[in-house]
Length: 154
Length: 83
Image (cartoon, rainbow over all chains, first blue to last red; front, side):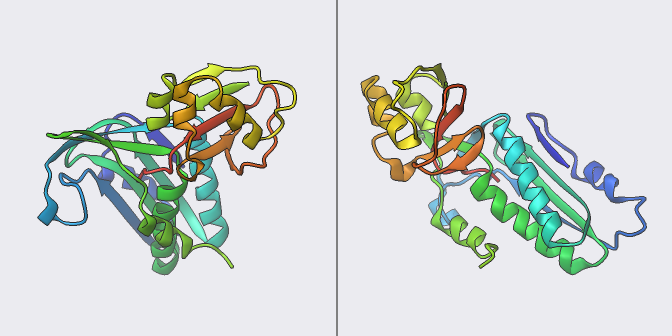
């Protein structure tokens, strides 16, 4: 299931959807938050106060649904959930939740990892970071491309 | 044909969405980009370096050789940074 929304979400409440299905033996959850600094480490602290996520309504849902379908093709999933926010988010706020459920943990871990890696390079979202020094569009990272590429099938 | 721009491309073009009627010989993305560049300095600047621009036709990623037709929705945007 895919949801793209401006409002916050409650991770505990989202996990409730995985109860009641006796075939599920393991659930893996990834939660993405807004960092309060720019760069690779706190050593380069630059006080990001907030960010704004823009997206492409319609294509976002289409791409997320395609990514979820690909995960379901590759792993025996009982259920999957992607919730992604857009709009202005303050430092520390939740951005994205990816959760997968399967009979055994390995499929849940791997598919969750796959979903967040592919989402980051395929779902049409763009971030602007708001800092004391002004607003900056976040640039795509080669490292994210590399992380996504390891899931490409040769 | 509807053309959409996102993130910094929208800022450079000056609008996020426009309806255009390209000449009939504009049949693929590469030709469309060439024609859009001629519309204004903002268009030319936004589409100057295609290495930092991604293209979608009808909400699917495509390459520069993809066909475009009247009625299509064509979007230009930077590499994505969600998650």
